[in-house]
Image (cartoon, rainbow, N blue to C red; front, side, top):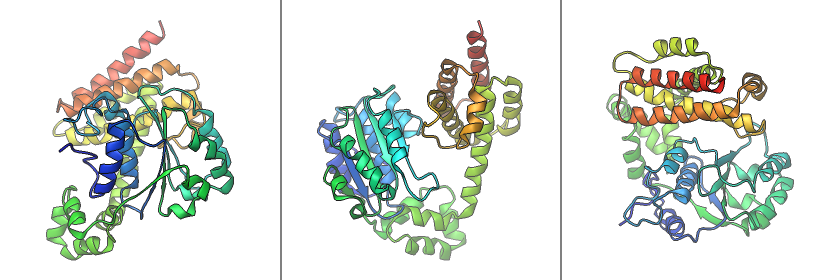
Length: 351
């Protein structure tokens, strides 16, 4: 049997129904994915986005998404410009201006995928005006556009929005499924042995969802590590984009261990790719959706004199480095190759 959405825990109905329609080309143009926090809504949207543009989606012998084609790799890593996320970004609601910005680019054809996917997180936080502004786009989008509206409760959305969308609900997982997933995470087995009460708290406090269980098992420490990695990645991305090659080399010597540095390198390169993606998108539009460079004014100042073609070359070099690291090449060698390939691209742009 074909593997559908292999990274999604449980949720067999979604795998079967959504996966089947994507595979045969009959998927809907708009979906509402509802379910409790941490139940897999973002995972469903991410895997569906990859499946919609997967080069092997019609190959019944390949997983869906296959995870190996160029489109899958970009989307699953969160690097595709054709998957656009709209969120509150710390505000109380998603207003009509955010939806107008979304609609302004609606008819722009995808960059390097078959489909453009819009993911609206916490969709129930759209104001009434924002939801009404979205109606026509939901009803008659371009044929290459699919919407995913994520919410804990679909009834919090306007009936007119619900009627124009297919509603999918993520399942509450059984205790065994939550435990099985947790034990795939680095360090979880050690916690279960050292602190069985904490592990039990994670299982009982999960309420059938992965997200709360992870929060209990790995509370603030993981968040601090992520923030630190993001800061380092933004620093390195700035060096590459602004052609500060000497600073980039110093950064590599400082952050990538000479020995046994592969895991560190693999972790950091993903954040660097996201940071560079932010900057290249901001070169096209000040209103582009970003993840790390949320200080748009500072980012705009940084890239003011950088040609978009150079930004695209840097991004491509980063994706090549990601693939090289997956082949387990020397970590430092790979990072130095990345720096020098960007230096070469910078030299060529000035000729």
